[in-house]
Image (cartoon, rainbow, N blue to C red):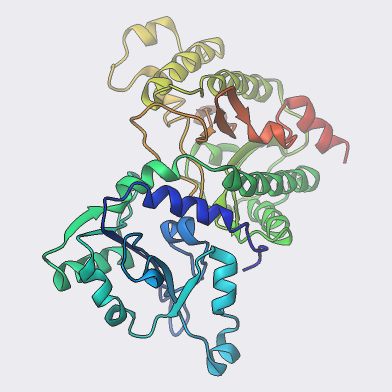
Length: 432
């Protein structure tokens, strides 16, 4: 891993939170993701399963975490099964965890090699009445490839059909939505790296640069600061490309007079940041670009103020849309007549602002969380209103990430001093 070892208290604390929600005499089993084949004999870069990482910090393929707090055999109350390294693996693939390193990383004291681990676990599983298995219950998830979690669940049901099975995801979704102070430390580091990337591209962007060159500048800065890379495929969209919400080709040349929308995040130690900024290719906003930008910025500032304890996400979205509706009228994009005659199922403002304003952030950029329960302290949300005007070749989205506290919202990007005002952006670009 590029990143330094994290504070093991992150994972000790997370496991304590999880087992406190388990029924008596229950076992929970977590697996790493598969490492997927690419072409020929190549494989995709490994990305750890979010649930096992959240509970252990182990960032390696073919790993298994077992939690069985009521187990009569102490060694199996909390244990890890890992790949046993050897000289051949070391020569070809490099470092794998030693038992000592796995304990130092996770805080788990009992480490076993995963050779025939299911046979080793057989007696332990038979001691449990209930089995908790995690599946991807993120409501944005669309399964398009095999997953180890689902394959293992099917294997368990076949081998142990008489046990009671429980959804670990139901617990994890609620727990992962609320960050501990240790997790927030890691997320703040990801934000700091995002800021460094933004400053780099503000100083290096000129008319004639390609979108992919801006992407390369960001990648350079992120990886130079020990990030794994991007937390999702970055959007580098100039001019009319910014009106395509998920534009990821990043292939066009940036023209003089273009406004550039950059939506990207840092994957630092498997925790994600998410930032969107817009800036003019030539360093100076046109009057219309500035007008649209400031309209979005006003909505963003008003929206983040609503991210407080007790807020319901879906009601909050409706409130943000009312704010945006007024700004669109002020920009001459909507009229009272448009609003009066609109289809309630697809309001008139959706022509220019068609997406949600906020999502959970954490290990995943669209992190787990309970969308239909009130917000509470420790949750982290994006705040990202936007206005898209294809006929003018202008797309503006501004996104910060907001921590909810008992004393009100804390903007983690303001905390880091990340530029956002028109005057700040122009000063950094023109002053270079």
